[in-house]
Length: 231
Image (cartoon, one colour):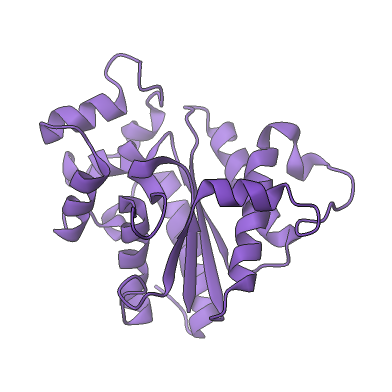
């Protein structure tokens, strides 16, 4: 199994394997109990820079236009649809098969329809590229909500975080609250240390819809790839 991940933000997915972000590490840790080993340690995880995804998505020799855009690919979600197609291409082209792709993005909104539309756009993008092993990883409203659930709330009563504003400039922003809790800036290095120390575990986040959506999609894909039900 080969895993390709992509998304936005240095402190989320990261920019490369040399500048890996905490979410890439967390995805690997979520998969490890099912695969039996760390894909990252086995050098079977590739962080794909979002710039490369953008380049691929604009290359019509690679991402060929399909039929006229309809409800599944509305203009405001085309970015997510196209990014999913591009990441699917990277996964399909990997030397190691079968491959799995995870595409991350913040939703930056407290409107559930916005979150759902962006997530569905990724699903439709994977489908359009004929790729069955694609998993959307969309935060509601942003990844700091998941981190606060683990680090501040000890995985309890986390639903309210998803209704918060994703604006970093808003009063009592999620990012500001996380940094206040940590007592220091939430840098990539700091967050990676927390992940490595086992302070954050995606599997323990069970009352946030954005996380359980990811978990259900990942379990379905892993079950298909590994040939056994994933609980």
